[in-house]
Image (cartoon, rainbow, N blue to C red):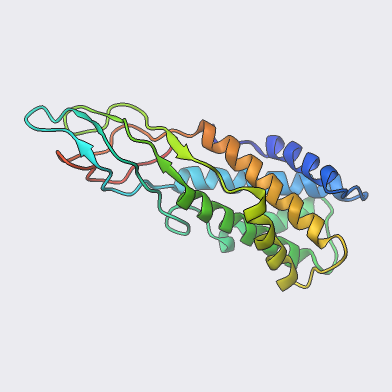
Length: 216
């Protein structure tokens, strides 16, 4: 499965929390919940992700063979991935099952869900399908690869901080928590990008792809 698993991301989250000096008794449980939530959200993303039609191609008739010659774009959430409203109940359930309760549980779940949605939205704008997918018979015949870079921690941290503050989570550890969420998302998406491929079978015209593509 191309999406990193919850346990893989949980390990990233534990490292991120330690580097942010978040070492309270609930930190390991929060890291587990964050990892599992991201794992489920990324699995949803892989299943929903869609490559937009119109990738430049050179596949002249009559054979309709050649390759794509330009980059392809992905649709952002909610069309091309889960939105915060889909992610939030997943996060809330995982926080509860990991005994992360308290009056701010709902606000924390919402902030994490919003952070994940924004991270995926940035991912779809910053990562593209690389040129060079083979075309045979007016259909892509080889897997496509991705190019670009997943959003960095520095880009995600202020977004996460804003979502935490909007939910009333403003203690002295809030910036560290925002940093840990951002670092976890950035590292996990970098792993995901290296694993994902574009599924063959996209219909093509002589000059461009003519249908949407999927990830695998």
